[in-house]
Length: 98
Image 1 (cartoon, rainbow, N blue to C red):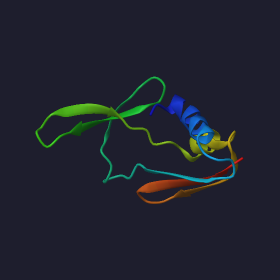
Image 2: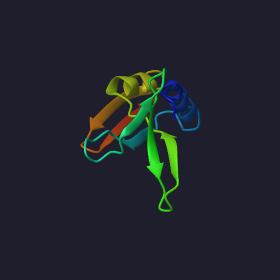
Image 3: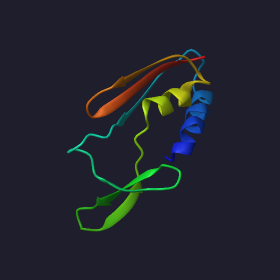
Image 4: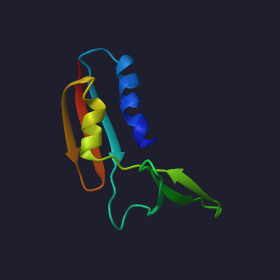
C-alpha cells in the first residue's frame, strides 16, 4: 500500500474490530542481501521493486518498508498502547485498540 494510505488502513481496520482488542500486524523489513532491490522511488517516497515470475514475465510492484515513526503515527489515533519489535527480516507491531 502507498505510504499515504497506512493511517487510513489502520483506522478502517480498527472500525471492524472490537474496542480493547489486541491487534498484530507483521511485514517484512528491508534486509540487505536478502530483499529484492528497490527499482525506483516516486515523488511521495513510495518504493517499487521488479518481481519476476517463474515464466520470466516481470512486473513492477509497490513495496514500502515503513519506518518505526510511520508505524507509530499510523496507530496513534486508535491504539491505547502499542509495541513495535524490529527483527532482522520482519517487523511486528502489536497494539490494543482504544
